[in-house]
Length: 244
Image 1 (tube, rainbow, N blue to C red):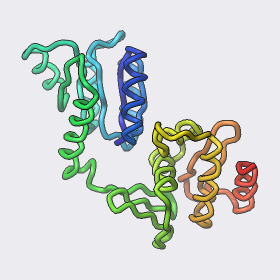
Image 2 (image 1 turned 120 degrees about the vertical axis):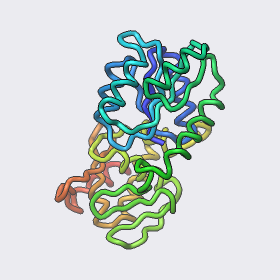
Image 3 (image 1 turned 30 degrees about the vertical axis):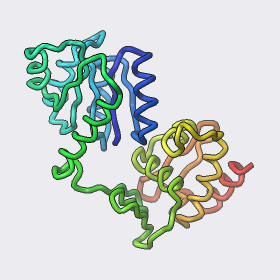
Image 4 (image 1 turned 90 degrees about the vertical axis):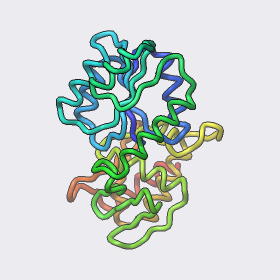
């Protein structure tokens, strides 16, 4: 799932982000309500918001109300230290879909996210489990990638890298971000591995591999704009540089 975590406790946010990413979620973090509201409004393809009530600038209840007022149809999981019936009712009335009381076990967060995902599947947010950019189409449910209708056989690691790039098309992802998405935390691996797998991915995608741009000194970006892909020569030069 693509998640937005709105939490001002830096230590908790770090720990929760690590655990969520270990479960293969993509996580954006906002340290306050205003930033969280701006990200929730601006981001496409967001599956759920994990929202703390006790934020420094505005209540999480107000953030939830504004998200709903803006017409954003995203699941909201509220985090709070308050455990009265009235508090839970306030959160649900503000637009939350579910409620977790602090302190909590991570397993409860994971289970509630799974439940929110199941609820969302029949609706419009999950009706089309495909990511597409130019000639590339990735079917998440079928674990299948096609280029101009032709099936491309990718390894699980290559599939995960392409999924991250497509989900954030147009945005630069660092090597560390790609590592976090495609490699389990228990596996020892260096950022150079990302360069090698991007090279493999470009090769398998053929001409469409030109959509994966190298942003030197930072990471990679998938260009989804019509006609925005670079030439094969540019991609070959970047791949050679990445390999070493």
